[in-house]
Amino acid sequence: MFSILISLILIGVLVIAHEFGHFIAAKKSGILVEEFSIGMGTKIFSRQMGETEFSIRLLPLGGFCRMQDQEEDGTIGPRSFLNKSVGVRFIVMFAGPFMNFLLAFIMIIGLTSTSYTAFPKIKEVLPGTPAQEIGLQAGDEMYRINGKRIHIYDELEAQIYKSGGEELRLDVMRDNQVYTYKLTPKYDAQRKGYLIGFAPEIHVGLFAEAVEGYSKISISDTMYYSYYSMLNYVKLTAEGLARVFTFTADKDEYGGPISIVKMVGDSYEAGMTYGVKEAVQNVIYIGAVLSANLGVLNLFPIPALDGGRILLLLVEAIRRRPLNPDLESKIHFLGFAFLMGLMVFVLYGDIVKVFA
Image (cartoon, rainbow, N blue to C red; front, side, top):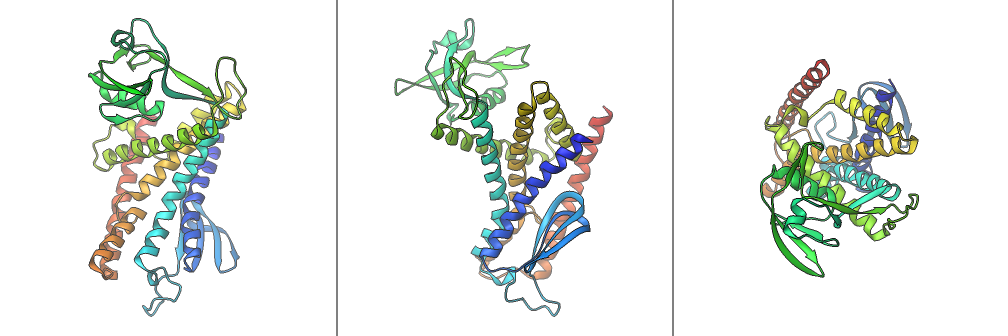
């Protein structure tokens, strides 16, 4: 029950951030926001504040920001979403996912400032490893792998994992010069992954307790690391969701509400073996990943999602006239039906995992 409570609070924060993005962009654009709701289904609490009704609904998944639309007689209200230009409507739609990216960025800043951060720079080359065999040295910085720029250690790990043990081309920065090497990662049975064989440079967060032998991370490096860490989550999420939507993903790559609750609960309990601070950090880490997930998911060009509405706005801009309202409604309905089918698919996968 405690895991469920933490998960609901976390999901609630992500939803509030997302809908607040739509809300503030709409208000600043002069659009009438009739209701700001957290949750879906039956209304269990509501309060009128100014011209907007703020409500909480029974199903604690999702939410919405209902703006003025067409009147009953079919006319468009003066402060309607539809009465605004394509550019304004684009900003209002994009503001929701943007707030999720911003929230993920802020969460990662908090984690980077209070814990340890690994950078793709060699502190020590381990003996008997591929890194030693090709002549990598302490102080070398991983610059590119197979032509892809490396900014943070997580990107390095992801590229090594994707390699599947195949040969890699490493571009290494040493004394302001780039040196190119070819290296084949070595499988480590204990870690169940491929390694190239070096200990990375680690910095202590600005607000973390100082540790002898480790330098404090600077403010600029904190922002740098947090930004590229957020972008890495976005990239990995987009790749994973593309596989889910095309039904090519492995069952372990996706999960629904049950998986989220279990993941949050397991992370919290694992952190509590060390202390409350570590437990909170683990939950915030999951929150950052989920926030990036939510932002990317909503930008996918699927009708009924923000990305689908943005796609239709682009079509409208190209055509220089809006789509037929009935046609647009049918498109969104088909998108909603697809999402409901996908949800059933994901929930089925959750249930199978539980019984397994």
